[in-house]
Image 1 (cartoon, rainbow, N blue to C red):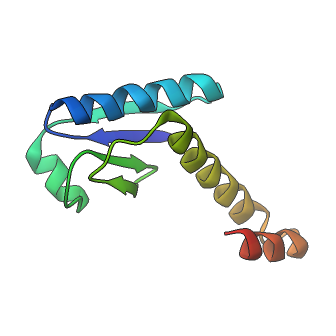
Image 2: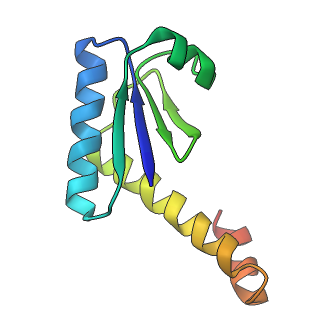
Image 3: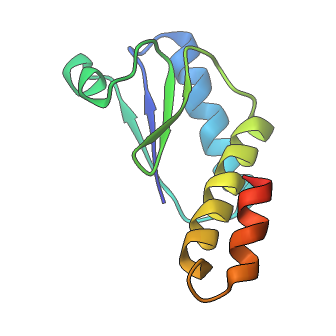
Length: 102
């Protein structure tokens, strides 16, 4: 899993980075966390306000500092959706559950 924290280096951006690191550590998942401060790279992602959080190339938060528990929930949802996609064609019942939950 690849996680990017996007920001200019302000205290809010650093707070989001710290919360993200804490969330990943508490979950025990393997994730590459990258802190992006280059404005050109931030602009290329389509993020409109910082701080921002991207999980596997999808913007999941913009313009606010999330608590670690909120980040855990975003990661869990991302993992759940990815697992649903993998099982989609092999287990039709899983597809039905994914549609209802997601």
